[in-house]
Length: 416
Image 1 (cartoon, rainbow, N blue to C red):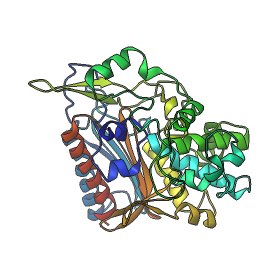
Image 2: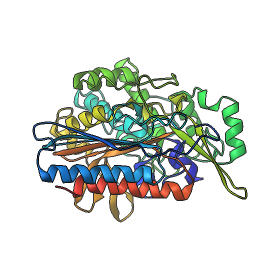
Image 3: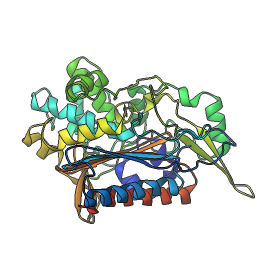
């Protein structure tokens, strides 16, 4: 049931960028529809919005961002950094219950953008000769996964391991959540607060036949990054969140980013995220359930990061410009495999994807987790982080994905 799984989880870049996204996640039954707040945009930096071309670009960006809420998203916030300075924008409301305008400096769940941080840390360990890209999983995590002797660290990083994904496939750790009765029962039974460990996820994957022999195909699987989180812990003696904080977050001054573990709240200012229940009655009823507070342990090293647009842009800029990895490891990270045979609109490297826009490729990742969708993309001279809280049925979601893609096109290909 791909519609469900593309969006519940810290979903694959290809599932969000190459196909329509699943139901955007949305506050309590009977809450009023979101009304678009006046978009707020700010600029900072040496040039800011000082000339006409900058003002034109800022207007284009704000209109493109507002198109997301115009398509039904509850909120959308973004930051763009380039040689002209920093542009920040916001559109929509933070909370359907209060209608308060969303703030562009708030935290959000970044979903699978977490994978870029995990991959960067693993590659730093490769650079220290503590892990080899072609080492087997069995060498470092003996007995943990059947066939681990034939699966390499590289194959975990680029999703060519073939391991089954219990977070993204029917019969995994989630019931059929797009069934309204099933979703309501799951929430009532504490499903949003359930703790799922990395080893439980790996065991669930191991109990299922692999999708294909290692290295023969590409298929996104959060199991790969659950294993990489365990690999970081085994190698360093520290949990992956601690190690990433020590190696990446602190050195870059990413003070608003954190790994919540089993904590269900988002600290500080933040937008609310929602899940849409669609009752196929006559007339069809859409109910928006606030899922902001949930235990993200199931996402773990594949998608639990909480961050801000400013922090993510700072990370993207540092990574692409060689501050976190030496050149030879960046070459490894950007050594891509196609996500679809014979096509190159979206290729995947070692935790970093390459997405082809009309004006050229950008590097980054996306993330989807209950209530929140994130895009993080960049080139050497321009980086963007976008977070939006979607909602609605399949038609609404498709419109929001189209608006998101248009925002990326405007960011990188317009106003240059």
